[in-house]
Length: 500
Image (tube, rainbow, N blue to C red; front, side, top):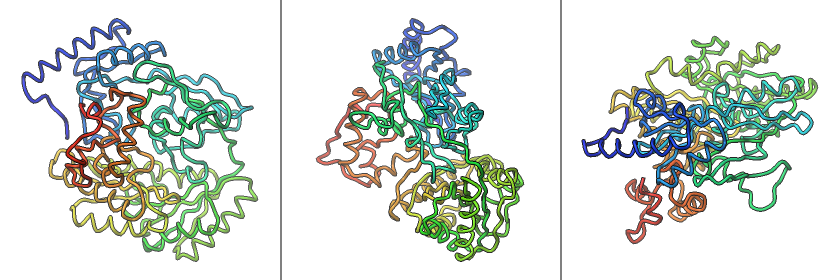
């Protein structure tokens, strides 16, 4: 495991002294049970879903009121202590990995649904509310919350806001940014802030779209107003098999080109279908090189017409078999494999690193064939599952993190996927965020000037660089060392943001 350790007795002594001063200060604003600092209490917080990288925080706080969140932030700002906000820890890019000299601010106790308004089709929820809990609470009103990441049973809405999470139905219904009206929280200085509003649009700059996807670098989210949508009268899912990756990839582009926007359009390759079929027995075709899951929802008439059109396109593109769900139970069975792709991968490998890049839909087959060549190059297996409809890839590189050489090859493999995605006209991330995982790859995609603009936004909200430092935006020093861009004149801009 890539776990940072104190390098010397002097370093350990410095950490202990710093910890004592921070704990003493926090004891003035929090009850004793809301402050964790012993190793056995803080170790469970040392990573998020990206388990290859770990760091034990100096202190973990578990505030119970907005006032306590504000007090923690004010205290840490006064002491120049880094703060990393944390929800359920289901993130996959290391965005919630602690800072070894900082405070992890857990929002776990902010788990209340404050208001459910079926008339305006909105809900006001605290940041620690689980994604799926919103839909469960809205169900009696015939409504639900559309973004549905695979971790929706556990992930929190605050984390969804931080990463701009999507899910299997984001093609038709959009990402978090399209389904949130307002975000409330606090800056690192403890100032209460509000982004967006209750109306469809808010005056001034669109700071709501800025804070959604900012990965906890600009503010700590405590409350979110989400949009709710009516549950469709009917939903049916097509499971289409293909004997060739190229045919399956071309079918994805063909469906969209036909003017069809499915409720969901997902793809899995043969290694992934084998893994999930062994786990959940979803009825997948294990002989297929790839399968597509194509969902239609709406009125019965709309669904019947769209299913027919999609089936025709899929057959024309070379589908070797097409199965259409006959009832709701079978539809959920088809989706059970896709929803359990990550845990299924955990059953066949000690560790996996889930990448998250995007490519133009027409390049789906190209990137999958390129990844197959990378498997040979790095001598590691890779199973692929992704939101094919919007070109959001999720290659899962299988490895053993206890083997340093495997971890190193895995990192190179992941970087190669991301760099290849950019070369194909895509981006280094779709919905999982940059965190620590993709810092080097950000140097590939963005120029010196663009990264400086990112730093400028960060400085406007957090001039000391204390909120989630060392994440998302690569320093110019890092990019220079990575060899993808030069630090002009040997000068590092914004040194205050590079001290951590």
